[in-house]
Length: 262
Image (tube, rainbow, N blue to C red; front, side, top):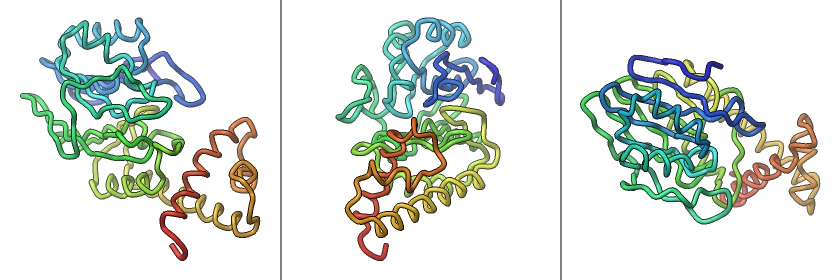
């Protein structure tokens, strides 16, 4: 995956140097526009990455948007805004661990809010699930959806209660499917050119996993979520069981919310 690439006219992707098990090749930072640039998800506060964002944008950054306030997506905002004077847009960080408390938006976005420029329009789409303050951004001219961690390339995302919510996540996936966009620009991985198929696969995969959770719970009443993980996720490396347990808990909470016969 190239560190910097042009994806469409006036849309570039810059890969942050933070590869890991959780981030894949790294966090995707997007630059949108020519004469005045919007940055989506400047990523972690790595000085070399922040310098590269400014360099590649030719110091034309006017807006900085974040999809959510997890530490691989928003901490670079503070330094980037200080260096450029750009307006910061997004939703405030919720309470809880793994949140970037340094994020302080100049403009708090709500579902449907627009960033309208002479070159493009971005519409905020509130997609809670992976995070309660998660926003996707619809580029109305391209009909592309910038999805942050709501939908990523090549994998599913961890839903970590209490801020992560599986019921909200499934609703948000359905909403993204109904948008019928031309492409998905994820927070990690490559551009996704077949959005409907990918979203349908994620929904189907989650429902299959939920069915396994329900079967395992009924067959083994009284087991903890920790004890249920190898029954529900027999295919994964035991090193990943702690992460899988978070999503399993999210499925359990969803089943409890929806009640018997759901």
